[in-house]
Length: 337
Image (tube, rainbow, N blue to C red):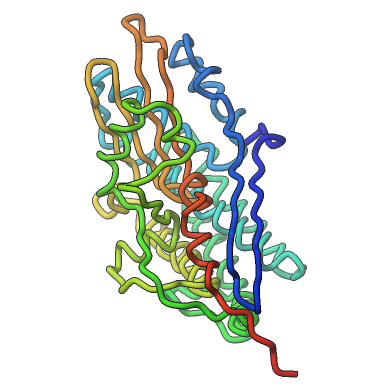
């Protein structure tokens, strides 16, 4: 978000006898969007939204647009839905790759050119108001594929080229001495939408700041999507599993773009909208960081009388959320020299 000075999360880890005894999180101060949007025409808010969000701008705009359209009881044609999903998918690939590079490959100068090449190919999809077809589309897809191969990411999900930057990073993470105990882990999915969106406008804004599902804070993001989609057994996933979930998702999304980005084969629940009553509606969008929610209430003149949003950050960095559960009780062991 552009309100970066308010967008800070403090994490404190306490260690006793080589065991992580406690993890404390002081959440960020969320931007006052409800106050900024109140009384505004929906069209003016939509135009200004990209300037408020530096990350996942297409997902944010798609969520608000879908919520407003549902509140107005407008029906959207299939071609429009397909184009919006394509934008969200392309943006997700870009954001996942950006996060992977910054978090894991920044020292690797040779990877920077490949990352820039992927970003250039993705920009063809994100920067267009109309679906990309013909030579421009084929060239963008080819550029993305070549750059992913240069990073060692193969077309086969879960496979990395030996000696590639990501394969070497996986090997490094495997050596990290952090032994976890098995715990029950839960993941946010489209099945939770109705419960969440009804509370967005029914509860006060404390739910958006500190959400829960029956007192629990599930994880959302690439790993959650993989676990839900593939119905994998629960466990205590670590850094390697989360990194591989991001890489696998990038491969899957690139394959969808290459195959024609058809609506019938799109990810289930990637953009969903829900009517909650006259002039009231919400929408959910799967962005890079996880499932994003927007809810609106419009007055009779079409102005926004209430707006609420729930970002993936509020789940993943919840005081009792997946980060806390993943670290608490883990054992730090001495590395052999």
